[in-house]
Length: 449
Ligand code: PLP
Image (cartoon, helix red, strand yellow):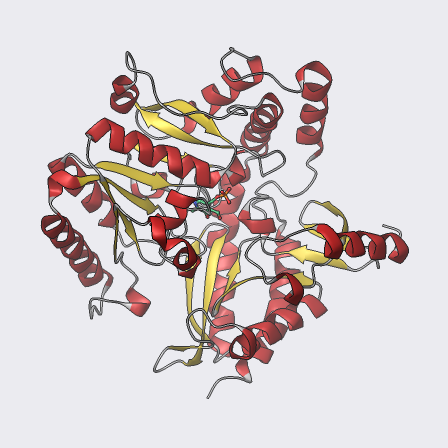
């Protein structure tokens, strides 16, 4: 790509003058002006290229600008750019069929939304209407989206500013052995104690008041904590015993990220409702949705479902989903993510951890990994405090800057860096990124004690 700093400067100036950015103090950010992207890379107007270890916000599972998906979007735009949701439209019908074919169990009806947060909103509404119960249980260390109900079930600091609407939400602790809330020393203990804690929470809340339990199958932004064997099956059993709707949020973990079509497949668990977005079409056009079980769909067979969106199942977004799913199937993208994760990424990250005192724990699966960075491996004190800002977060900022200086765009959240490249990344690209990560970690190491 030809550098074009003047255009870059104009893009940046208009952004700074008029774009109000999410989750940010507007005067304290410095967004990079991006000129283009392809595959696992993007570049700026000065001609600097970056290998994207963040997949945007963990959504470009097939990389940027996949030619078959771009072409499918162009074809759909030429044929039928948009149409209202009450009609049967080819792209929407086909997207729903392809998704339903891959979702576990009897999750065979698809309610389309514009993204992940509204998928969670609708899943919780369906659960409350289906059960006639008011409350929802969700986990600390979770993220479910930025709209009112989705942010209220979120279990991280992004919820705090919007907590006025929390009525009907109760948080509990899900398993996370490295930072156990249960004084556990083994995965078995962590699993058993987390299930007992959930059971007790339900008993004290009143089982007949709980409509739903919502969990990320593998919590993403909160730290990629793969649940121990038996945990999700245990939650399923608790839900069944109490008539509680089990909602799995697969917005980040779904569509190949874990090396399975859905993370639920790693555990053989079938929820009652499953939310998705991001990887469904790699974010080429905004799309999300809820996969609905036969029983819950039955609740709304003769009684109207009170909810909808103007762009539910937007044809352009659905055409992108059809093409994305077909590309993933034809090119073996899910299998590639599983293979590269097990054979290269997991082992090489563990090897990095041995050499870098700042790496407290490596955890993940497929193309979905986290490095938990610490000041001190023995105490496990995080490299920066929970929810640190400004000077307190300087060590993570220094680490990120060191990665970017080496052409690697990292995903950073609190004291963690997540290694979440496109599921289509090649082995050579992955190794190139790991070399840059290795160098950047020496900067993090300087903040250890
Ligand atoms: N659920 C999970 C697990 C997510 O990771 C996210 C976004 O990161 C969301 C929901 C919200 O999705 P969206 O930003 O598309 O509304």
